[in-house]
Image (cartoon, rainbow, N blue to C red; front, side, top):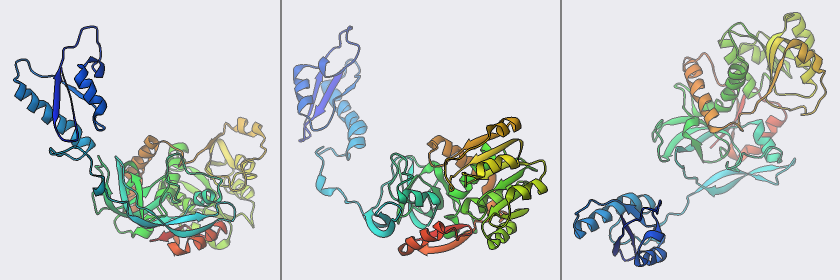
Length: 421
């Protein structure tokens, strides 16, 4: 067994020793004193062990071990060079600057402003995207207010979905190439000129769509697919109620359910919104400010609906139970009216209703990858055929990010609000 190490000068020292049977692992303790001394003084390099063939000449052994060290260590940990292995820190490149939208004075009265940050670098199985457009989501508002923090390890910059061009690839990336136009879901960092996304959460920009339309897809389609088809188990002929039908998720959920043969009902806050969502495929839109959705659905669907997709919570919980059919499913994806309420569980038990709380952002990488694959196989062809269309409400340049958030807070949007870079 040979152990070897190197000094800054590039001089190589090789020591040979035999391992006793009682020693089960090799290491510094089994080397001669001289080799151990070199290990202690070496510049950040650990000794390696390698088997050598019996009868090898000293010169051959030296050459073989030296080449092995270059291939397996220097090329991986440093730059492959035979003259010296001392790092040249003067040649390190500085992180490039980029513009991003930062939160000033986090809290209920937060403001957004354009700031300068460092351009991120993609890690293994990640890609760097030059962002053309980013979708605005209610979760961005909650994060800026300080009530919905980003997941551990995620960028603190707001933004969970983007569309743009792939400009750098991390190690091991296989599904896309430099220059590809893509849409991406991410745990954070989308409100910036450059954003990093996992390879497993990237999809090609559908043919025929612009990047500002593509930015409206990831969060809305992932959420609608997960909660209607994976959790809700939507089948053709199912009766579905979508609350917040004019939201980004709502406009997409209505289309996806309708195109799969479901009978869709939806609520919204204005007559203009109701008209818009009926044009998207809802059989009946209910203006909750003028009508009681429970009374409307009891008349329209006496047997009850199979799935309720709800963003409201609060007082809606008991009402949702009333309109659900036996063995119906309530999928709660937000709590805009509040997370605490009272409910008579007897009705839940008697109807055998299932109530599921669901968020996308907190799901594991593996789960999100599975959703990506299923969504692409099931609905990307429909996007490219024009059977489903992203609904873009309004475009805002990044300097007007505050106005974009105010529009969403006021519930003025029909579809997705998009930031452009």
